[in-house]
Image 1: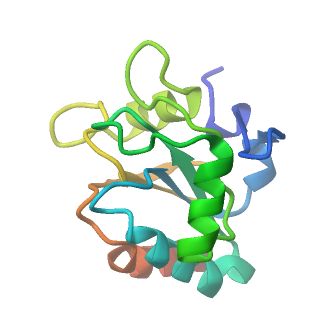
Image 2 (image 1 turned 90 degrees about the horizontal axis):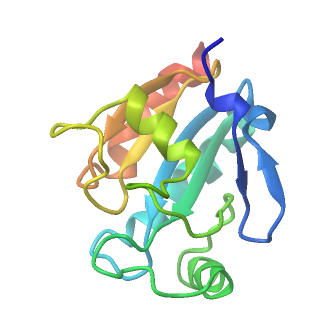
Image 3 (image 1 turned 45 degrees about the vertical axis):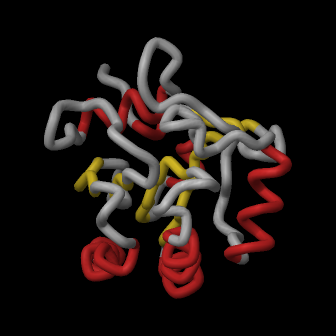
Length: 161
């Protein structure tokens, strides 16, 4: 049997192990984030989407990563405080991970293999986004340039299904 997203777990910023199967039946927007990136203001858009659609079944999952020009240098505590203080982030933030290479987190190995990018499956930069439907299927991969607001219509469509 092939692995599904729901077979995986990830560690929340608090240190709690989170089973992704707990998100079954929800639309997921999974993002690799960083606090010192030109795209960091996208946290505001991600939080807006979360506020607007969480009661309809949207979950935004943030995975901090320091693999791109050392733009996420802080500790997990520093990252969480930064997100809350500057962007009012309430959606789940996970422990800092790698998204590429030998130590890439299994969640991102899975996402990359299901939705390759323009130049292959490696993540090219912070704020690459993956949209996942209620059944755990990876629907689409978005470049860091794609703002959360531009994904809203597709999220609305998936929430209706």
